[in-house]
Length: 221
Image 1 (spheres, one colour):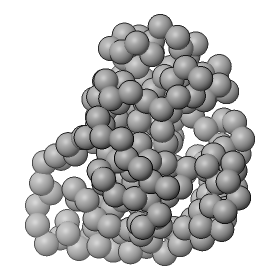
Image 2: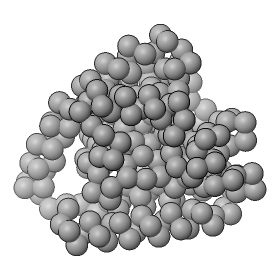
Image 3: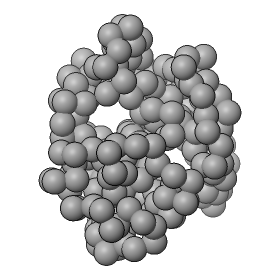
Image 4: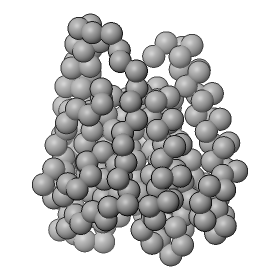
């Protein structure tokens, strides 16, 4: 991105955050304390998408600030990255009561914001954390079969990974998520080279939002 496009993307993200803070599109707005639009640099090469805010996030209005967030920062450091290097958000912007799974109408309402955020940032790699964010891009796929694998979807790369919270609650996932993040630097190098080639080879196509199938309950484990 140029400095001008960075600034424009930043303005777009700020506008979306403002809209999210006042959103009443689904029932989650009636129980939230603070909405959590997401945060990070407008020119981030990597975008991480989790599932939904938890109790700490609901209080602070920021994503991944609890135990899972601390673990995520450790995983990023292992890959030679800082939290400030990446953009972090969720598929729903308000906390589902009791940390229940997001409902289809809630996913659909927030997807409008998420698509605009993806378009503004235009990341090289999207990392999905958990089954609901993975289901947005790979509906019907089991994460145990594809985690850590990078594939090109819609003009950028996507990697499905286990949610840090799942790894904390079930130690059997810890080696898998650590190994997946360890591969990230090499995958980012590949993504950079491949995307440069595609830009040189052909003009950039208009962004096409991914069709969602939030109503499907994906069984991952």
